[in-house]
Length: 613
View: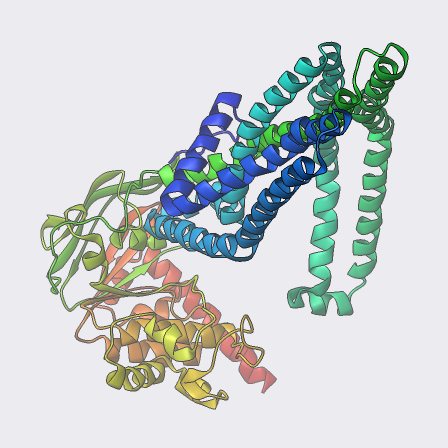
C-alpha cells in the first residue's frame, strides 16, 4: 500500500455520498434508530411550523370572529394533548430508546472496526497515512456516525420546513417573503465567512496549541520526572510555554477585526434586519394602512422567528454534513479497504508437522527500499539456527516474512515443499511460537500475559505457566508479586498492579514462547535487556526447552550462537555467510571479524570489572 499525498478536504459530491454511506451503515447496525431519528426531526420542525402558521392564526381569527369559547378551548386542548404526546415520545427517546440504541451502535460498529483492525495486514499499521486514518476512524466513531445521520435528517427536513415556511409567509403576504433574504444572506454568506475565518485561525493556532499540549503532557509523565528535577530544563519548558501563549495571542489579534466585522454582519442580517424590519412592516400594514389583520400580523411575526431558526438549523446541518463527510471518509476508507493478507484467509491445512521451510530467491521491499534481496535459506526439522548480522541487515524482516506478516515481492517461501500462501493463515501461524524484541505487556495478569489466549486446559494452565516462567528466569520475580502469577501488570486498571523492569518483561515474553506447544519456535533478540550471566542461563534454557523443536533465534551477541547447528550471517538483506560457528571462524570472514571484536570488548569489560573490584 503506497502512501499517497494527504488531502485535507474532499469534494462536495464525495461528502454527500459519504453521508449517504453513513446512513446505510447505521441502517445495518440499528435500523430502529433511523426511524426514530427521522420521526424526531420531523416532529421538531412540524412543531415550529404548526405553532407559527396554524395555531396563532386559528386562535386570533377565532377571537376576532367571535367563535365560542368551547370551540377555541377544544382546539387548544387537542393541540395540548398532541404536544404532550410528542413531548412524552421525546422523553422516551432520550431516556430509553436512545441509550439502548447507542449501546447497540457502539457494539455493532466497533465489532466491525476491531474485526477489520484484526484482519488487515501488519503493513497497514506501519503505513503512517493508513494508521492516521485508522485512528481517526476509531476516535468516537459511534458518536460521529450518529451525528452524521442526525445532520442528514436535519438537512432534509430543514429544507422541507424552509420551503413550507416560505409558502406560508407568501400566502399571508407576498412582500414579507423578501425579508427571508436577510437570514439567508446572514447564514450562507457571513456565517460561511466566519467558518472559513475560524478554520484559518485554528490552523494558525495549531502549532502553538501542539506546543502547549506537549508541555502539559511532559509535566506530568513519569518518564520525564527525573530530568525535570536534576536539570534546569523546566526553565526552557516555561520559556517555550510563554512563547506559545504569545503566539496564540498574536494569532487572535490577527483575526480579531475581521471576526468582529463578520460576526456583526451575521447578527444584523440573521436577526436584526428581519426582526426589526418585518415588525415595522407588519405594524405599518396593520395600524396605518389597515391592509393586514391582527391574525396575519401574528402569523408573519411568529413565522419570522420560526423561519430564522429553521434556516440557522438548516445551514448548521449543511456545515455538519461537509465536516462529518471527512470523518466518514476515514471510516469508509478503513472499512472498505481490501486486505492483501487477510487474517481470516482460508486455505490448505498445513498439519502439525514442519519438515522443512525454504526461502527461494526471496526479495522484499518497504515501499521503494529493498531490505531483502534474492535470499536463499533453509530450516530443517529439529535443528537450531541462528540469524546474525548488523542492525538493518534484514533479520527481523525475514522473521516477519516467515510468519506471513508480509508476502515476498519476489520469490517463494515453502513449507514442506508448498508455498505458504496456499495454507490457511491461522493454522499456518499456529505452527510457530515467537518472542519478539519489541515486546508489549498487556494490562492483564502475569498468567494471561504468558498464555496470551492459547487453548490450554484450565487444570494444566497454572502448571505450564510456572514451568515456562522457570525456564525464562521470571518465576521467582512473578511469585514475589502480591498475587503471584495472578498479579495484574501495569497500573492501567489496577493501582496495585506490578510494573516490571525491561529485563523482567523480556523474560515473560520469552515464557510465552515456552508455554506454547508447536513445532517451530522463534526468539528475536531474547536477551537484549539481560546481563551476560542471565543471558547465558537463558540460552541454556532455550536450548534445553526447545530441544524437540526447530529453533531459530536472532542475537547480536555472537557468544550465544556457538551451540547453534547452523548460522546464517545476513548483510544487505541477503545471506553472506553460513555454516557452523567453527566453520565461520575458520573462514576468517565477516562473522569471524564480528566475533573477535565482541570477544575483545567482553574481555576489556571483564578487566575493568576486576580492577574496580
